[in-house]
Image 1 (cartoon, rainbow, N blue to C red):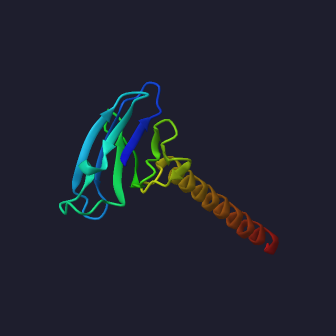
Image 2: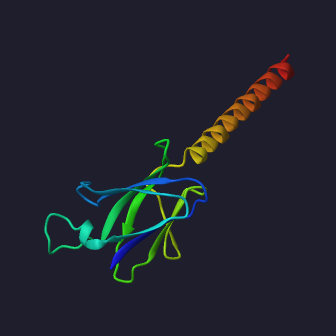
Length: 139
């Protein structure tokens, strides 16, 4: 039961680091060229106890510029589902299931900050208008 990993990018090579899920000890590091698929035997991913086969590993995916684009746990099962990495969408799929990343998307968090800032500015303007109008009516 190998771990099959595929780079879906047409042009971007990826560096993939595989580590133990709980102890975070590094098990393997590999570079995948564009459109390349690799087959990692699970025997190479065993922990220090030779009888234990990990049920999941932690995978980190980086671009050649060392930008972390995805990090998260990936299950290892007997059905040898393909782990597909798409750097364009910053997503990883296990078979047909899209896996969540544990890194936060900076674009999404920045838009939340912008929306919050705009809301606060609008609220301050509304309060200022209400206070200014009430002062003018009392005169």
